[in-house]
Image (cartoon, rainbow, N blue to C red; front, side, top):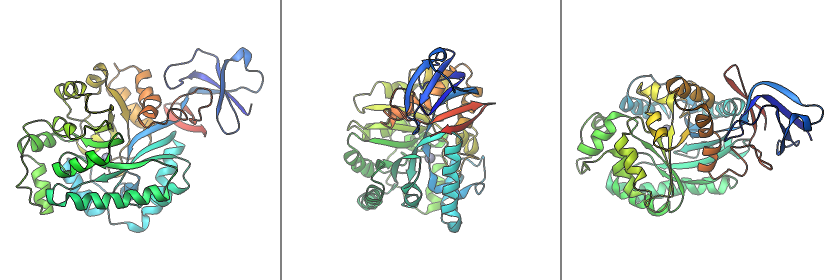
Length: 385
Ligand SMILES: [Zn+2]
């Protein structure tokens, strides 16, 4: 046995292990066994605090890392998006290094796997030799119906690059959001993502429901600014989630991201339409929601309704760090009634299940290799990977 660890508490991805449990690992950090300390023999390393499996960050945009401290906070979503669009092509020289620094931060603070949104191929070079696991969501936008085929072709081109150059990681297409993807593009995406894992930004701002349902509100300003004619848009009379979900009915596994304004009616609607999709996860990014809109989703309502939950940092454009433990802290302090164990599952076993990587990641079981994270003084660090 190469290393033997015990700690004040050990969370195995699902539950806390009995006190005095010892984690036995080989030199590649593959879990060999979990035994009582009486059976562990010599050389047991006792660490203060808690040990847990490496964390899974379910929503990130690593390609936006060069926008750290470049975008104003509390501006609301429309001004955030406009600012992002005007600045994302700047600071080009700093891009590669910023992505590498961000990936280092992810790993050091205990994240081992990432659901990463990609609009282009910028992040491929970073990912080629990365110790992190990357699930790449190639994101499509296009609210003008007539551009749907062209946007799909562009997305497929990017997807081909990812699949050719990063065969070790899964990559697939995903819609950006209900307010930025036309019905025609949704229909093309539905066909292309048959049975696949996809991600979509959902109800991040109050204006999203207003726009989708009634065709008015702050999001109109976005299209005015961009000079895009959306006069052909037909409001649905329904909330955003209830408008986009029916487009994706080919057994997709769906990660709905943000959900800041998702209502109990939306939660009930999703729960009542499980015939459409294979699995559904709500991913929360508290740091980004507070940065942009100063509003957190009602995670308690989701948890008490039995929703499956994930956690993401979003990008440096809308967060001060990519430290997933800081998001866990925000959730714990805002929603003290959600059990600690549940929130820890969201960043470990539940997330590994969402990304189809449970065999290796998200829990301590014989043969898993999830990375060992120590949480001490409310900070997380990767001990071994
Ligand atoms: Zn995002």
